[in-house]
Image 1 (cartoon, rainbow, N blue to C red):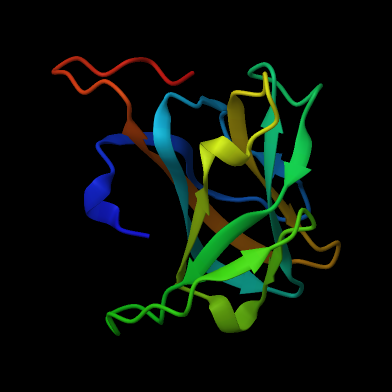
Image 2 (image 1 turned 90 degrees about the horizontal axis):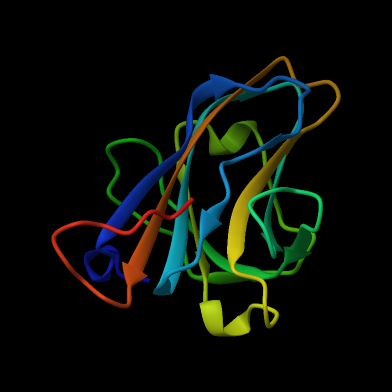
Length: 154
């Protein structure tokens, strides 16, 4: 997991408080060798936040299916630390109040995607008793064909 290898940055969810509302990021079209999402966690209060990655054959949730992924969790703001790379199954990973003000780095290998499925999104599902769930997400891709004008990923 090396940020320097990515050359296409895509904002997919503006900073927002998604209290009690499951929210999908914008679906991105997989055009690269590697895909990652950086989930910025603000204040999480009252309940956990389930983070899953979904693949689909179109830019919508109608055919979406949860998939496994690898992730790392940063340390608190200004600590410049990262946890070990960990594998999450298709159920995803739960973030809690102890993860306030951290970044969840999610990485997907496009070769692991189902044939024909070329869109990815992150589903963020706060628990029913959440009173604050501040998040934002950007996507990163290492595109196959580098050029001055980036291909659309939506």
